[in-house]
Amino acid sequence: MNTMENLDKLDQRSPVTELVETSGHAGSEWLARYSSSLMGVFGTPQRVLVRGAGCLVWDADGKEYLDLLGGIAVNALGHAHPFVTSVISSQLATLGHVSNFFTSPTQIALAEKLLELSAAPAGSKVFFTNSGTEANEAAFKLARRNSGSSSGEAGGKRRTRIIALEGAFHGRTMGALALTAKEAYRAPFEPMPGGVEHIPFGDIEALRNAVDDTVAAVFLEPIQGEAGVRPLPAGYLKAAREFTAEAGALLILDEVQTGIARTGKWLASEDAGIVPDAITLAKGLGGGFPIGALVTFGEQTSSLLSAGQHGTTFGGNPVATAAALATLHAIESQHVLDNVRAVGGHVRQSLAAVDGVIEVRGEGLLIGFDLDADVAPAAVTAALDAGFIINSPGPRTIRLAPPLILTTEQADRFLAALPAILQTAKDAQ
Ligand SMILES: *Cc1c(COP(=O)(O)O)cnc(C)c1O
Image (cartoon, rainbow, N blue to C red):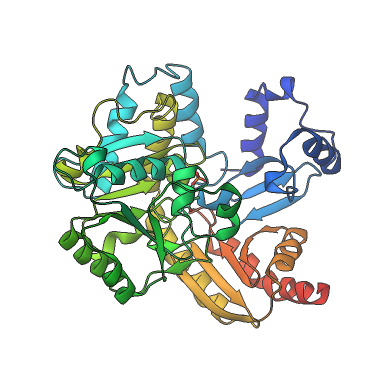
C-alpha cells in the first residue's frame, strides 16, 4: 500500500486533531509543555512523534525515521497496520468494555488461540492483563499459592523462596520489581515483597543449588532483553525444568519481550523441549494496543488461583483482545515468522562484519550488539539524527527490536548508515 495514501486516509478519519492540534507546533514547543506537565520518570523524550506507517514514523518537525525499536518490541506489525486498525475500530464501535462480571467472544477466542500457539496441555488457562508487569504480578501471586502446605494457606507455608536471575527485568510494580534484579530500580522502594533471591545468570550449578522444596517458583527470561539481549545458555531451560519438577517448584517463563514471533518462533522457549508451568506475555501481543497475559499450563497450576483471588478491571477487554486476535491473525496470514527469521538472520550476520561491533546476540528480530567503546548512548543520538530509532540498554550495547515486518531493504539502509553513526558517536566522546 502507498504509504502517503495510507496516512491521508488516517488523517481524514481522525477526529483527534479537533482535540489536539497535532500539526504546526515544533518538537521543542511540545517538549517544553511535556516537562511542565508530565512526571520526570522517563527523563526527556528523544523526539515528539506524531504519526507512523509500517516501519516509519514522523516527528513533530516533519522528520522521518526508520523505527528499529518498535516501541520496545511492541509494534509487531509496525504502525497503523490497516487490518489491526480496522479490527480495533470496529470492535470499539460494537462493544468496547464489559467488566469481568461478563465475558465476550473475542476474550474467549484469544484465550483459546494463546493456548493453541503455546502448545499448552489440557487444563491450561489464561488470565488477561494490560501490561507485562501485571502479567508477572499475577504470576507472582500464582507462585505464592504454590505454598507447599496441603491447604495452601499462609500459616502452613513451606515454600517461601522465589528464584530469579541476575540481570532479570520483570517490570516495575512491586511484585515484578522484587523479581527485577537492577539495584537502581529497587533500592528507592525497599522493602521489597519478601522471598526473592537473584542467582548468577546462566549458571546451571547455581540453579541446582538454589532449587529445593522451599522454593515456590523460578522466574526466567529465555533471552534477557533489558540486560542487553542475553540468551540463556543451551540446556539451561531444560535443567531448570528438571530441578523445579523435582522440587515441586513452578517454572515461570517471562516471554513478555521474547514472545509473539519476536524471535522467529511464537515463543522463544519453543525449541527447549520443555513444558513450563506458566508463561507471561505482553509487549507484541496487541500489536501496539496494551494487553498482557499469564498462561498457566495444566490443571494443577491453573487452579492455584481460585475465584476471588485475583482480578483486574480492564484486563481482557473486548478491544484489547480483538487487537491481539488481529495481530496474531496478521502474523500468520502475512508469513511474518518467515520474515523475522530471514531478515533477522541477515541483520545479525551483517552486523558481525561492521567495524566497531565486537559481539552480536539474539534471535529473530530481537538483536543486541556490543561496541568496542562506551559510545552506545551517543550512537542512539547519532542514529536519530541520521533518521533511525535504536536503543542502548547499556553503555556499549545497542538493542534492535523493530517491527516484525521490517524488509531487507529497510534493514540494509540502517546497516549502510551504521559505520558513519558509530564514527559520529566516537567523535562526540
Ligand atoms: C517490558 C518487560 C516487562 C514489563 O512490561 P510492562 O508492559 O512495561 O509492564 C516485563 N518483563 C520483560 C521481560 C519485559 O521485557
